[in-house]
Image 1 (cartoon, one colour):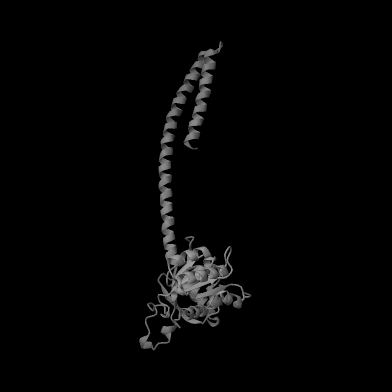
Image 2 (tube, rainbow, N blue to C red):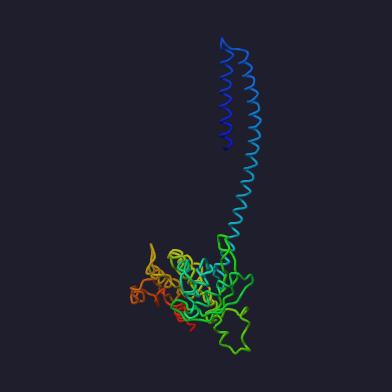
Length: 341
């Protein structure tokens, strides 16, 4: 009950008592017992008014507490978002699985290593990306590591979808799921193929070996246009692993605004987007190039197998690639467009 309802109810009670008092006093047949009962009722009303004041004070205290709790909740949510973003955009690959290897959460770098959109990996088993002859070993180790408190190392062969298999080091530690319940495994995934091929004397300790990546694209500026958030995040993660500085936007209008602020080295655009599509974008880019004297190589990216490559090239794109292509193909295409082969 809020304060307005409380005041309203007390006022109604008061009105009823006053009406009863008036009736008793004006009644020709009133008795002393009635008067005494009325006095008791009047005293009770005074007590109720005292309780009302106490309740109003308590309501004020509750409001202050509610406000403080709300502020604390908002702070927690803001802090959680910061840590969630740090996890999602971390340069190393991180996953959270259950004891059976079912992926509960992962960041964009992990999705890029596995070459699958993040949203498609949730609920899928990590064992799908482990070499077939290591399945039994992998599952047995996951269940074993669930009961170990310290960080443990696990080496397996990872086979990304449509990509080259690589030697992987998994740093595994038991922990909690997002819901807070125990039974999850926190996994840091590293490609150590480069270090496995070195002579033993030159190999770094596996626990500190960094993730290797080519340096030929360091500092390259890429503008990526796609209306799907998952695709933007995955492509950005793939490119950032290779030193590319990526700006992602969701619409043609946002892309043109970005081009007013800076000139990228390469533009990549989805073809099929709502409102204005990739063909609208390339026409406007060509007009902007004529106005500013620019020449920015652009590539078309599509999720449709039937998309006409010739149509994209004739529209003004220098290259064309399917979204299911391996990351190495995407990197090779960008390197070629930027003249960094």
